[in-house]
Image (cartoon, rainbow over all chains, first blue to last red; front, top):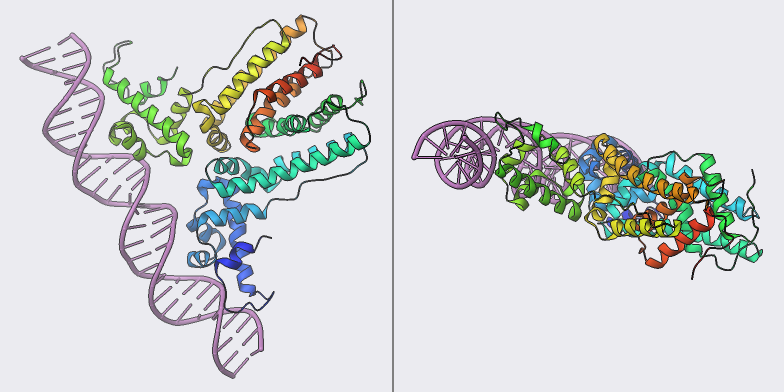
Length: 211
Length: 211
DNA sequence: GACGTTCGCTACGACACGGTAGCGTAGCGA
DNA sequence: TCGCTACGCTACCGTGTCGTAGCGAACGTC
């Protein structure tokens, strides 16, 4: 999934089937790793082909042999560090929510993606390719949220008037907001409270809050 | 409040008191306006002294006479377009929330700030000065939210276990998230639903939802 | 009207970066 | 062992940007 771009960027005469020159993969990995490093340190603006070359030890010419321009390189690098989001099925809405939001909190704080995210969002506002990348990323999370709510509905836990779109926006949005905009920590207590809020918003029970 | 930086950047021998050379204010305004334009069009990366000079018609040397570097200039420009957020007192929590969130939605979609925001958030992740600017901006909104909840509490509308921090993060976060991350529109219907959710989360009434 | 300030203009020198060409070398696969 | 491929290196050219110097002209103030 992640070597697709370079594979057709420089169509090799050979490459009969799955065989790939180990020199190629070494160069690619070194370049992508350096790109990720630079992204986390200085954002999109700090990623230049020259800087990547210096950091990775791969010659600038070699980089251009693999990627047509820095933009495609960045897209590949970001693609590299997009971990699949949690999609748990714990049997209860509360458990599913806790797992999903805890996973999101981890992604937003301690994963490599965390440091790149602000730059990514900014770039997505102007770059169509980056935008679709981010779109897929958020879409995956949304559908994971939807599935959890659907399971809860199948169990008869949900009220009839629940708008999954609004509920997920509020829950996920709270974490994004505190991390990106308000620069507040994402404590386990916060997650618990958000889960409580969502549960009380969506379920039939007059009060399902567990201390 | 916004001419503070330039006033001490080039300490004029004269300027006995409040008198300022109209040529200075003209240059400053032209430069700041051009900076805001460039910010909205291309983000932080697109703001260069040269580009500002061309756009504004003010000579590059003149810009350097007023600001030590582009960073300070950007901070001044952003400061310029930070509108005060809505702080309404409608008499009901629902009314206050609707007014605040509608104001936020407007800021996030149609104000000049809307286009600059992604770049601003990204820059705040690395620049201390920008970070404090954004901090003040969010703080103002937070305290406005808190005041509305405090008024509701004084009216006896609020439940005892309401965490204003979490509630505001979810409400405000939903709008930020949809605008910045999910790239979804902020419809009036969405705002209504978020308000409904907040009201049902915080008030004693079993159902205060108005169709 | 005279003086002082601000401005615009041109011309710099330095640097970073993009992107390419050519050549020799090292490593891979058979 | 041999051919082929990928690589590293150097040297480029062009561009954009930074930040400064010096000058004359325009403008505001008194």
